[in-house]
Length: 70
Image 1 (tube, helix red, strand yellow):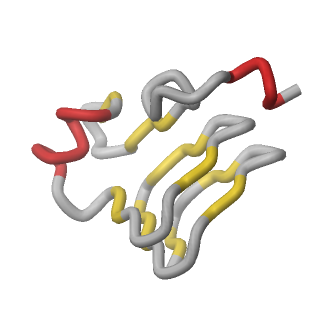
Image 2: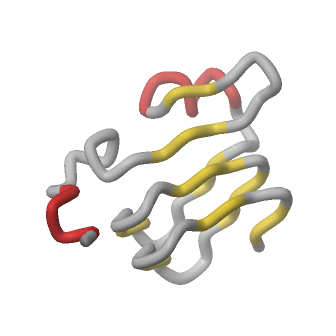
């Protein structure tokens, strides 16, 4: 399920993921079962969360090589 989110090009999303108010940067590979935007404290441990609750996810935050995003 994806709600109120922006997904940039070359993003690969595994099965059974849920996103709410997320911005996924180009080249991200989202593992199966990932949940973003439902627990702000948990999201803030891994990603940047804005004052409005928007979660920014980049390949670097996922410890992935962003150069493959081109």
